[in-house]
Length: 88
Image (cartoon, rainbow, N blue to C red; front, top):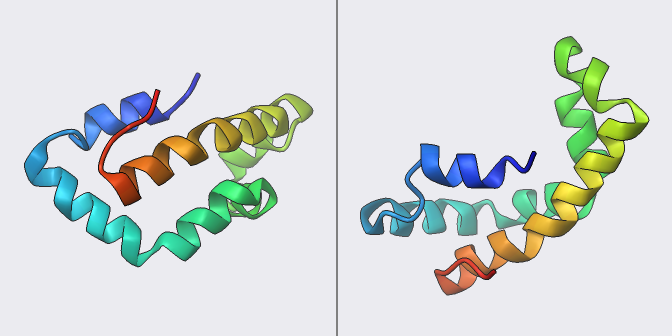
């Protein structure tokens, strides 16, 4: 399951009022966002701090899923942050 569609819905990222603030926030922290998306090991370390998440994410299937999600969502998030639109 890809968390990005639910994240977009929950935080109303397509709402024009939210969009400008969300994009500004993500631009200000882009180095951290990009680090997490381009280096899944870094994200894995962050997620593994919670013992409940660590038990799932540190499995082979969990690592494959995390790599896939990062690879798939990086261009989507990049397009949203820098161009203001989600690419398909």
